[in-house]
Image (cartoon, rainbow, N blue to C red; front, side, top):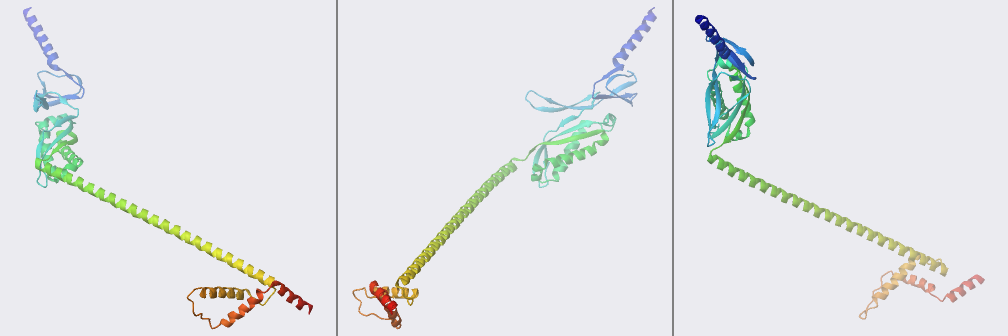
Length: 340
């Protein structure tokens, strides 16, 4: 009976050991690498898995994590773990000093997102995967920044991220890792460079302000000159239209006076009944008489000069004499001529 109890106890112990050590539960998005007698055996999927406790053993790999103390400072720690996380993981690198192409020392902080695509390669192709990725990223970052000048480093973050991702993705492919994104968080220049940049930005702002002020004054002067030009053009057009209207009015007035004089002369000639008196002789004789009156009207007039053709003018005056005779005598003469 004692031997039977011993055998039963051994069997129970083996079963218990098998249950404790042989039953493996793997969480979702995780996996484990199982080795049998020190050699790769299989990769456990998520869920319940059964292994032989003595023959099979999960292989451990390094895992990186960050610890924050009570003062807020962060420390990077590395430990061994049997579980391999297949989710996208983040590595936040501490700031590191790099030198640009124009020999400017600056501090850059970057973060990297990667994902384990092949757990077997990640386990057997590299000894310490997180540390290898970190060191590779740091050296690649130095190489990329060394090809750029400082101003390009500040304005070309997308270019830096793309170059880092391409180089790291190609280098980590043999490790079974996919680098999804690399982001440059902070670029901190030295204090001297920062002061020079602030002075440069201040000078640039003052330059833009002066340029804008000069452009405003230029546009204001242009608008003012255009306004004065338009005003003068409008004023000239107004004066032109005024002069045209005045000239047209004077012309119309002269035409009306001439028509009135012509009509008066025609009526006088018709009333006199003398066809020998032309309107031209009448007007010349009238103006001649008025001119003589003006010449002899002054108190100091001593000599009056008559033109050489005064005889023609006097004949016109003779004609006017007939014109200004007594109307009754003119009528009588006309009657006598009719009786004869």
